[in-house]
Length: 115
Length: 110
Image (cartoon, rainbow over all chains, first blue to last red):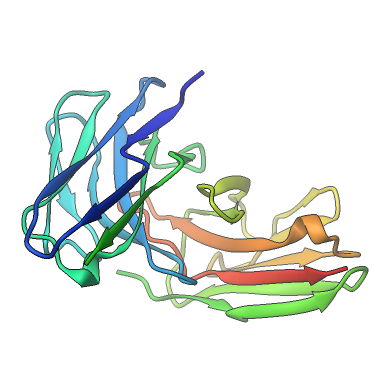
């Protein structure tokens, strides 16, 4: 079972370049999330999609855009990368239940460096 | 948005010692989850606590949900190097916006 797949695993960008991080899940989950994790820190929510066709801002949305392409795929775009966006990005998905059954399954992460 | 605090932020202890880490908020949660993240990997669910006062055990790990459902603790007995990692709590509050605490980074020294 693939679970949550993120690409690319590693990326180096120059300031001002753009890129898209891809995320796909094969668990038929309704909800998908993008988090960033700075060195030695916890996870901060960038954007989430509670269900197909909806997206909402998280804690740190500035500088990012997202697209819920279909139920399986949720992409994160950096239009003009900045050094402050150097981080490890995690995609996650869940059933979307409002109960404790709403378990997050994470991808392996995408390490982004902006020079 | 609830303010969620985890403490301590960092903890380094010797193998065999006991420890407790905390997840506190001023808000009431319908349930709360604990995750552990090992270096280079994504977080993995340890447990979900749902009922106020609930205690759940996972081998040497004991999780407790506060009576008022505003706080939770994780106690590890006889810590092992394999317990090393970042421990994260996240409240389930009915909405889909799942915001984690800043985590407790635990190091168990052999």
